[in-house]
Length: 337
Image 1 (cartoon, rainbow, N blue to C red):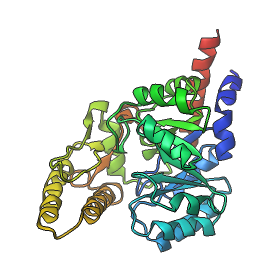
Image 2 (spheres, helix red, strand yellow):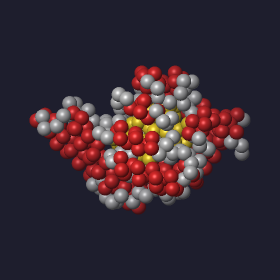
Image 3 (tube, rainbow, N blue to C red):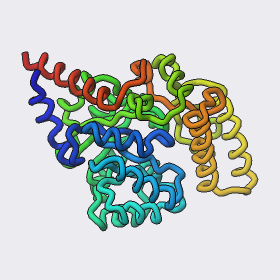
Image 4 (tube, helix red, strand yellow):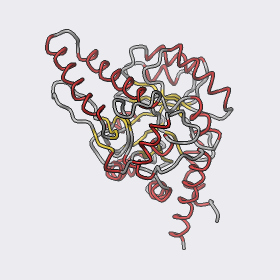
């Protein structure tokens, strides 16, 4: 079977990343670290370090460690509300990181220029067409269109709807990568035909052999179905909390209590809105660490997308990417026939 049609449709994405396939790994805190990132890049995809709440020193060490495991391109995902964002950008520049992904809201003033100053490509998330246009006008080099089926922080609109809305308008201007709920190659083929330059997957890679996630974490994924991955509920409209999709457990209830606690602090004036939102982010980082690293699958956070039902066993990254590419190529062949 030839992959010629698939290679042609992915050409813009592979050229943008400098990779063999336009399959980008979503940045998953504690999971997307040196081992998984290097494995994905070595297997022809594009790995991305999840900086999350890391200090500049920790990110510096992680980039160095990743470079020791791969000579292929990889990126770094930075959170816009990180209090040391510009220091983290400096660390990326120091190591000539080729691609930086900004997540968690609009890029703060000066951040786009700081990232692009040393020639890095900047990728941002666009949860709506108006925002996609604004980001491209601001100088962003590529977009990720991520639907609510994704794991971790999510928006309110489904992937298929966002893709239909954004790809026809934006795909000719910049490379657009589609994410959220993708677990098989047939879906990849469909989005490529709609104009996407490639796709982003996270959940599908979380339980790869190279993932350092605890065996308990992986077993929870293997047992789960799509309907087990639920979105968190915002309990106080005064505290805008981005919903998070994760497998339902006791940790889900604990987050509700945490929101109440932070809302009370906000009411009393003990913290401002920025600090309140940072407390929520730090809560998630800690809850995720509990599950991923410590294996506490009841009290920790099991962030997963709705594609979790397609994660049934531990497999090497290279096998996962090969399967996805073969499925996508076969789907495209059937259309031609």
